[in-house]
Length: 374
Image (tube, rainbow, N blue to C red; front, side):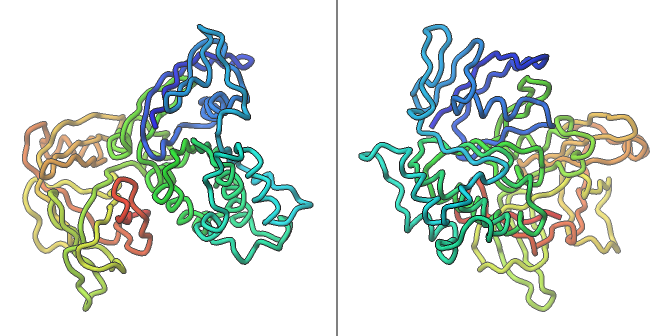
């Protein structure tokens, strides 16, 4: 489904002026608090009407101020999952789930309750009331209720924001299953690099009510200039690879792709499995000669594509076998080594920075996993 948004809207002193088009499976609206992410989701849902502009999802015009078109909320076929689950406390889980079915026309209720319950792992919770559930369990039930409305589009407004790290880890695999096993496109609001790196196929970056960049996750996360000072250290490359072999004696796995070979902490999947590796820019060292006598196991041949200074730091874009990766080093190191575009170098990556214990399902390749959450 193609989602096209081109809107202008004022909320008090805040002016939203956003335009983007995407057909990603899970599109992350990414940016700091107050950048307009939730406002866009509410406009797509029909909870707000734009002052000017047009919103089209899968060929269905949801709003168009030029023609006066505005599709009512109940006809938009949109499932909305909020930061807080917003379950009915007096109903059981099963009753909360069945409530979602009322929002779909009887002849268009394609979601199967048994399949949704199985996918979200909530079969043992059906007789409980929301007050007896953990935060992660409540969010899974909220997702199930939204799915049982048989939506054509899912909206998720920072569904993990109120959860602690343990509950986030609990719910992440279910969000991956939602992305990979359903055909329902998802718009996902977040300000966390770790979340969008793991879940998003595409990213729309917002700042002060405007879209400053959009595109595939692998491209956007290498744009370190798009990230906040707090999140910049989490940016880097996302590379699809394949497990070539397991080095059982050391508890390691060997991955291969056009960029070369990478040794990572053991991945519990068979050889031949497609995986995705997240390589943070801050975890890469650059050498002008192939290092010797070094503990780091991963040394990739590369060519410098470009260098962008950022105060005391320098962001270096490298080409490794046709794949782009980003390295963040000090500007002093850059000048001492005489780095410049076109120069051959070596990218050095410690294996421990690619933590095999945090394996994720891949966004672009359904059978893949992601490694390297740090």
